[in-house]
Length: 299
Image (tube, rainbow, N blue to C red; front, side, top):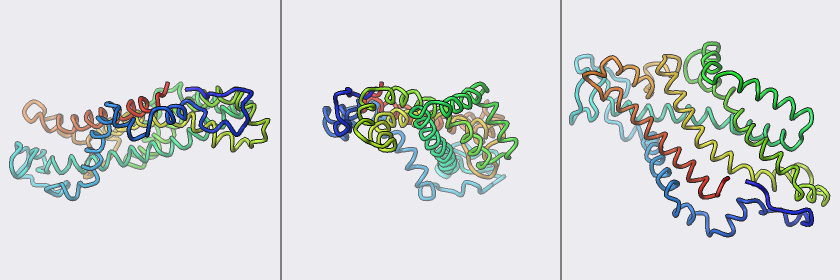
């Protein structure tokens, strides 16, 4: 995605000259473009079902997700327990809803801070260049050189298992992706003629960044954000499956999959149902991210 402009244009003509601005003016209202994009509609519907189920868990749940009934363990789906019970007699349907709240909350907190930091660092690095850009690039290269899960597991061990450990670990690693993308796209815009014209017209660096460069790069970062949430949810589920994530008795999809693994031959739904919830959520967020890219024609 590149900005559209020339050295002959004055700074007053810069606003809305990016690719996103051209699409917004030439393809009708935003809501109409969204409605005509199948990937966006499907992703929004799927994601909305998961988010609403998580938000309305106290209303939709039929049992206390932490309540145990050792005499009623490993029951098959029935009218009393719609999705059956686990080995401790806890209602799987209720735990599934509350697990959605847990995993979506952690994923949301674990991506929003890296997103903000990555956008700020990447944008300023690509625009300023020089020694600052060199330092940022070396830090990014260093983090990328290590496998993602190695860093995350090491941080979780150092900070401690649980929601706090997961959030800290993912925040320390997650900003790198946004910084790399924003640095590259911002550097392209910073070297273009229309930015030089804007500087010559007396616009401040802050105004150029906020009003003209960032609108042309932020959409790409948002698309990346939607896909990154999927990756973070999988990471949270994986850590919980390994016993390093959300700790009992808090409901979590990864813990539910791990608890049901020992009974998968006879009570397959114990692991399959929370696994299906992870897949369903991932499909919805992935389609939503692709749909945003289609709506804005992100290259």
